[in-house]
Amino acid sequence: MRMGLAVDASCDLPQAFLRQHGIVVMPIVVKVDNETFLDDRDPAEIQRFIDRQLGSRSHSAQTEPCSVRQVEDLFLERLVLEHDCVFCLTITATRSPIFEHVNRASFAILKSYREVRKQAGVPGPFMMRVIDTRNLFAAEGPATIEAARMIAADETPAAIRERLLYVANHTYGYMLPRDLYYLRARAKKKNDRSVGLVSAMLGSALDIKPILRCYRGDTGPVGKVRGFEPGAQALFDYAARRVRAGLLVPAVCVSYGGDLAVLAQLPGYAGLRTACDECGVQLTEAPMSITGMVNVGEGAVTLGFAAEEHEAQF
Image 1 (tube, helix red, strand yellow):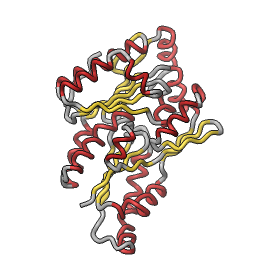
Image 2 (cartoon, helix red, strand yellow):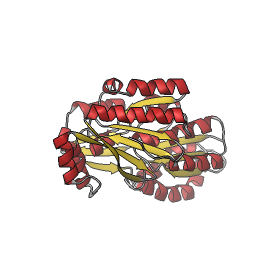
Image 3 (cartoon, one colour):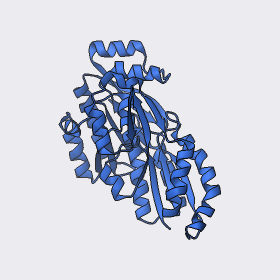
C-alpha cells in the first residue's frame, strides 16, 4: 500500500526531513499590511519574511489557512493518485480551523476519489485519516516523525492511526517568547485572553519571560524566568532531563523565529544536544513558520517531545 503524509505549514520540521519523506505541506497565506507571504515551509519565503523586519506590525497580520475547497483540490488532483492512504496531521483544533477544514474536506474526497482514480487507471480504494496533533509548531513534529517511521516500516493504517492518537495525547509543547507586548497584541487581535495586559506590563518592566506549555490543546504558563537567555537555559535544561528520563518517540523538535545560528548559541542548547546524542534521540532544528512568527513574535523558541505524563518542573 502506498502511504503518504500531509501537514499544515505551521509544523516546524526541517525542509530536508519533509523532502526525505515526501511530506506534502498544506500552505497558509499570511498578509501583513500590503504584503502577502505564502507559508509553505519554503526556506526562501521564510527568509524573505525575516529580512523584511516587519517587527511589531506582524501582530495585525491576517492568516488564511487552506480552505475546505483547496484541501479537496489538493487531494483529488494529486494525492488520491499518488497514494492509497494519506495521514493528515494538523495543528491543534483549539487554536486553528485547519483540522476542521481538512476533516470536512475528507468527506467530499472520500465520495469523489473513485471516479478520479478510475479515469487515471489507478485501481483500488483510497483512505484518508485526519489527526489533530493537539499541539503547536515544533510540537507537531514528534507525531509527524513517528508517522514517517511507521510508514517506512510498512505498518498498517490502523496501527499507525492508533499510535499517532496516543502520541498526540502525550506530546508536550513549550514556547519561550521574547516580547510579551507583541504576544498580547496578537492575542487581542484573535480575541485570545491567555496573555493579559497586566502580565505583559509586568513582564516587560522586570524582563520576566513566561515558559508556556501546550498539552492536549490547552495552552498556559508553567514557569517564569527573568530574562530570555536564562529562560532558554531553563527550558533546554528541562528538555535534557526529559530526554534522559525517556521519551515515547526518540525525537526532540526545536524551532526558532529567526536565524537558526542564534538558536545554537543560546544557553543550555549545547547541553540538550549532548543529552540527545548520549540517549540516541533525534534533535531536529527548523526555522519557525511564518505563521508561528506572526502569532508569537520573532525570536521566540518552541520545543516539543512526546513522553509519559509528568509535571512540568521549572
